[in-house]
Amino acid sequence: MPADTRTLPTPKPTLVILTAPGTPEPYNLAHLRQLADVELVHADELPSAIKGAEVLLLWDFFSSALRQAWPFAKKLKWVHVAAAGVDAILFDEFAASDIPLTNAAGVFDVPIAEFALASVLAHDKQLYVSHELAKKRVWKHRETTLTRGSRALIVGTGGIGRTIAALFKAVGMEVRGVGRTARENDPDFGTVVASPDLAAHVGWADHVIAVAPLTDQTRKMINSSVLAAMKPTAQLINVGRGQLVDEDALIHALRAGTIASATLDVVTEEPLKVSSPLFSLENVHLSAHMSGDVAGWRNTLAQQFAANLQRFMAGEPLAHPVDKQLGYVTRG
Image (cartoon, rainbow, N blue to C red; front, side, top):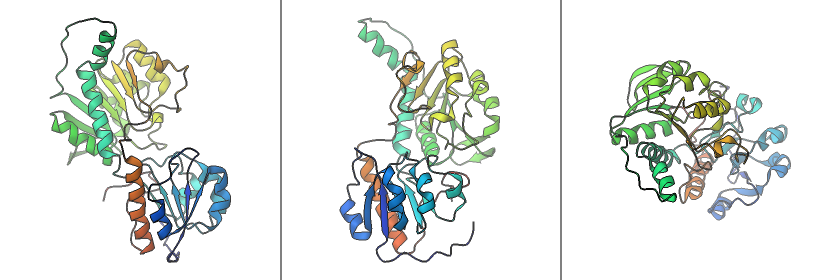
């Protein structure tokens, strides 16, 4: 990366907060105004507002508006996105620049891990089946699956994936990871399988959890070959990005019984169109991209940004810097 030759910020930097209509503003906005000259804008206002901005907070974290505003961002020194995933804003010009990008690493780790565990238990204990039978006033005894001793392949070895691994191991599950490079003796996963070899190893798992960052390398990594190699009793859980999965191939696999079920907190196009077959398939369990959004999550995001803003003003290293070439925060 080129040497950072930019000057330190003024005592009160100019902060532009990109938000969206109807989105609650940061609860600590008054505190942020004490630290910086703050302007709240919507996407259509960003090209004008960013001309004087030193700091940009993407409170509307799915917005791609920075790409259109980029030619005007002459004074920008730091961008923070209030989300774990940064795929929406990592266009080529920004990725090639020396302007640092930080994200909300750590905020969603435990909530998403809990959601993943709940999805495993719901599958193993047939909670969805029980719910449907109860609605039909049917009393039907069945045998369920023991979760302890079952196997989970966690596709994504970042902070969220590692928190999922720890929680799964706490209930007696066996875990492996899928990452950029294969290795043994990983402190959280033990065995890590290289992403290109996913199809060769996915048959080991009873549950496959997708939580990898979305990059050119991970887009549609769970494809027809991977789905065909899964156990017919296995469940796919996607709490990462919808584009990690080839959705057409998934629908085909679910209809054919190639895999048992899919729990999808994310889909390729959100909100999911009412015409999507995913709504009608009985072995699909949907939620509206909410696995990490526990009560108070926006306040936690605002607190995290305020702490990083104070680091920025003091000339200290920023927390959670994203490697813009890889598309995520690297460990260490």
